[in-house]
Length: 231
Image (tube, rainbow, N blue to C red; front, side, top):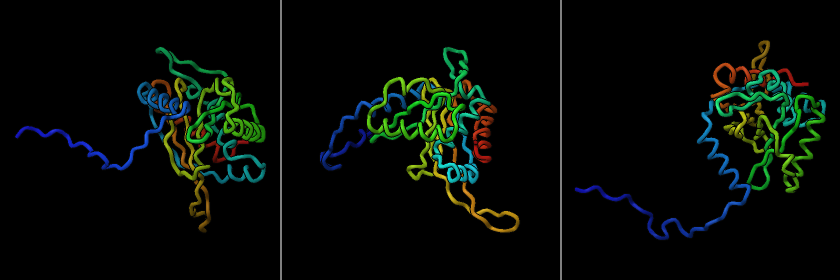
């Protein structure tokens, strides 16, 4: 018996079909996602981090948790230069400035305004800057220079209540980090059950430059900063 052709949907089987054209931002996201997956051999690592000290900073200093994440990433990037870098044309580019792109949702799309020299700024400065650029991003007021120059990308999914998410590298950067929502967990301490908070981190690294021990070392560096509370 000859092979049968694959079944096709009958007209109307899926109901009415509405065709939508993606916005310019959505087309950009689709293009960049495809480019990343097609051109970067990425390595993904994850970690569970105790963030009680980081949450205490939020309460005590009135800063945002995203600012704490930026501060922790900035310190780790300074200590691990191959994460603050790129692989280009068969060679490594290591950058002297730590510029972190922090993704912001604008409608159904995401953009990543750049926090320049993030390692030199206080938690209060980072919080104020992030509040300003986030508001400007949602209002569609960001200029191209404000979206340029990032050496690393951070996505804080905590505002969406997501406990874990994959990270997507922005070419030609060497790495990107995704953070979930801090969640309450029971802990045994000194024979008594207490409550602590854990955070899931996911690192995506370009395995041509940030591989093996380099990637693990950088992720451990971010975790250590968060566990002690980056000042």
